[in-house]
Amino acid sequence: MVFFRSVSAFTRLRSRVGQQSSLSNSVRWIQMQSSTDLDLKSQLQELIPEQQDRLKKLKSEHGKVQLGNITVDMVIGGMRGMTGLLWETSLLDPEEGIRFRGLSIPECQKVLPTAQSGAEPLPEGLLWLLLTGKVPSKEQVEALSKDLASRAAVPDYVYNAIDALPSTAHPMTQFASGVMALQVQSEFQKAYENGIHKSKFWEPTYEDCLNLIARVPVVAAYVYRRMYKNGDSIPSDKSLDYGANFSHMLGFDDEKMKELMRLYITIHSDHEGGNVSAHTGHLVGSALSDPYLSFAAALNGLAGPLHGLANQEVLLWIKQVVEECGEDISKEQLKEYVWKTLNSGKVVPGYGHGVLRNTDPRYVCQREFALKHLPDDPLFQLVSKLYEVVPPVLTQLGKVKNPWPNVDAHSGVLLNHYGLTEARYYTVLFGVSRSLGICSQLIWDRALGLALERPKSVTMDWLDAHCKKASSA
Image (cartoon, rainbow, N blue to C red; front, side):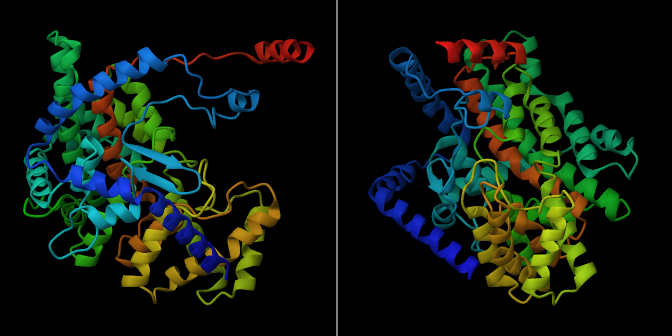
């Protein structure tokens, strides 16, 4: 019953928010559909001067407006709750979840173009939305898909760099090394060395970012086939869309797996700027490091157990439950196993979030996909039981601000169902997806001329002295 109450609450919240913004969103969608230009870069050339003027006006008229108070807890606690980054492509609400350029995941599923035979949004459409704030037409998405396919060639030295590593190296190590090798062809680095004016920084950044987005699935698929399929690589198929082609290169041509990959890439693409990978990409990029260097740094952050690596930990933990207790484990047995995990000093992977205080909408849309395509899968049924069992346990524990599942709680079970069973590889899929969001923001970082990121740090002595002074005042 916990699960259904949570989904019901989420539905009511989504409905309430939808009622509040239905009129503005309807107008917004009409405006979004008004452009017929098929070239994404031309769209940006029109949009950037408007946004540059908007930023200048914000700074000149409201630059001294305070956004909140910083506490000692925030300084010690990893800057949580501080409003300190400009991130245009998405915004995360603690209760409602992520919005991409103002659109929720259900709204994106409703308005973004889909494959001819599918129902899930095409990642190319989301990329267009992230960059322009406009919902693209089917023709615009097709044009962008062809553009990305034309950019997807990967030089041999990239494969050689990966092959220099042991095949047992973690997939993220191999993937990040491949991205670093791609940096040799950076258009931004060449343009900067040739003295390009700062007002034009965004243009070679755009070329780098689209090249990177186009090539990372090729590199990621090469890592997968090298590690798990005896190095038998599968060539790209330019007739397929971005998500379907990635699935094809991995070796999965089931149409439902292609649909899953489209959904996976779309919902994992961006999660505003404060998470480790997004923030790292922005931070490194603020030093005018090119997109390859910035994204490789972001991948290294994504590889941490407290961030993207968590998606592999979820499936491994679920399989451990099955191994020890069987697939037909009862809810009471499952409750005991959850307590066993917690009492051993570990966390239940896939539950909780640094910002969210409700069920992650990315979890909900994956559950809807599972109910549609694999309702009888034993691991999916176990995931459903966990949703009923874990939140009450974590609430009883009393130390968890958010007892609800996040995106990682579901993705591994879906991938496993279609044959992608190698959990250690899952974070690479996350990395491919995150290229869309991080690269979109890097282009806007350069277009808006955002400054080098350099927050002030203090020592514990400084904090002690400051707090003593404040208490005596």
